[in-house]
Image (tube, rainbow, N blue to C red; front, side, top):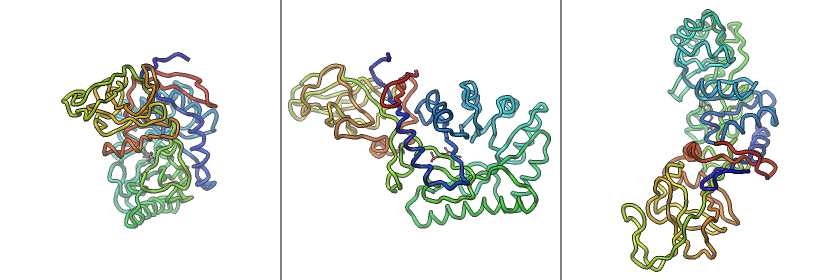
Length: 386
Ligand SMILES: *Cc1c(COP(=O)(O)O)cnc(C)c1O
């Protein structure tokens, strides 16, 4: 399989499968799995991941952030339901119908606009209920929310098929936050119950995200919207999961030069690092343009030949240096593990997030387009994208 062995991301479908199988054990029979595949599957390559989920793991529901992502899935032959979690401008309304995509509806006025731009085609909606995230959706008293849902349902060419809400702190360790999540679930369940009393029985009512499914499961949620755990990262690394998620992405790079420099030599832009002794340095062919955080300058480490090497000086756009004084036999062309395992050593996206003051989600989403995605199945490379 040919690809440029400069910096590349390995995507393990085997680990993806394990994460799906493990997660499913925590869902009751009434809850179907919806895989959140927005943002190129959190940077993991939708071209490979989504067909695998649909064709080999039998997933029937997908969610994306916008209509372009949704249409791309349809063009790639995805047949399952696709829900857009974010905003679609009204002038794109017809496409929702043309490609059989379900749109999240934020409020009554938005539904009116979609109805007006539908050109006679039916638009399927899941109405967002804002139970505490204060991001999108209907807010207020249960009866007022239900009134709005009834008004939306009565609009021409609009078909309300579901309601959903999103948790703000489902991954938290704080007892306070547990109550907050419980209140959020109770609120949407109350909306669903009230709608039923009014004779409106929707196909779907869903509120579980990755963390919700494992820490706050309720069989009242007809779908569990699985995102981060699908990709083998923790919703909150400080809160244990009942099983070990297997990271799907590894990030690999390569050594382009090895040299030994004397004491008191400055390394990289800004001269922020100075050798304290004779030092063997390796230059690595990856930088912040690949999505490798510049915040790892002088902080992060990498794995070469099964051993850790500290990053020395600033991470540049396409390259950085590290100290390999204690690693024997480092040579040009050696594979460097930036995220993943080599021998006994492992660096996860969550570790990098911890070192750079962010979350694993941002680390994997940030791996840029110029990094080829090498797809691994049954332990073998089966395809390359990008
Ligand atoms: C992104 C997203 C999810 C997935 O969240 P994870 O924490 O990755 O599981 C679920 N629901 C909505 C509405 C989202 O925007």
